[in-house]
Image (tube, rainbow over all chains, first blue to last red; front, side, top):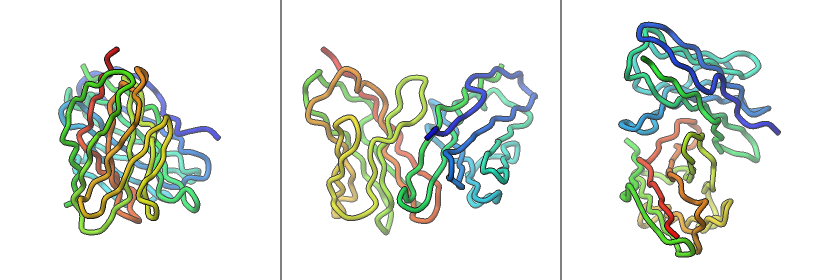
Amino acid sequence: KAGVTQTPRYLIKTRGQQVTLSCSPISGHRSVSWYQQTPGQGLQFLFEYFSETQRNKGNFPGRFSGRQFSNSRSEMNVSTLELGDSALYLCASTGSGNSGNTIYFGEGSWLTVV
Amino acid sequence: AQSVTQPDIHITVSEGASLELRCNYSYGATPYLFWYVQSPGQGLQLLLKYFSGDTLVQGIKGFEAEFKRSQSSFNLRKPSVHWSDAAEYFCAVVIGGYQKVTFGTGTKLQVIP
């Protein structure tokens, strides 16, 4: 079955703009989480959604937000972009049952803020 | 707070040589443990996982890892490295029931002929 799909793969934005990234989890997975990866800070947890509810949140400013739809697809939004928001944003989905808590990642969305 | 330590930032091995990447975690209970690999410009690919049971787990691409509770370690091994294994490797832990992954800082593997 298809893996975690993220769109867009690459994008360039200007400081002050906002951006929305999309993630489609593996079919049947209800948990979606987001991570930011930068050379300086490594991989950092942003937030996690399950059944349209945010269950966990990392230590990021309120400019970073997300949501999950009834079909488990998720979006994250970053408003008032700063240069430091340039990063690879990774989405992950988690199954249940036999797949346990295995977390599968997408290819990521590369965001460059100029 | 839980933490994951990968003490080796960069490792260089010769093709055909054996490999061991170290990972230690700090948490009161045994978390779920994972190893992921990331090639340049790519996302994270799951190599293997440990939830419970047999402490030696086999993964894809010929990798294996051994969980040692007494040492709070989950080291990744491969008996013979191939040039295509050059990538960055991340150890990760998850507290049971919560889908928040805590990653180590990663180990970059370079393979030389």
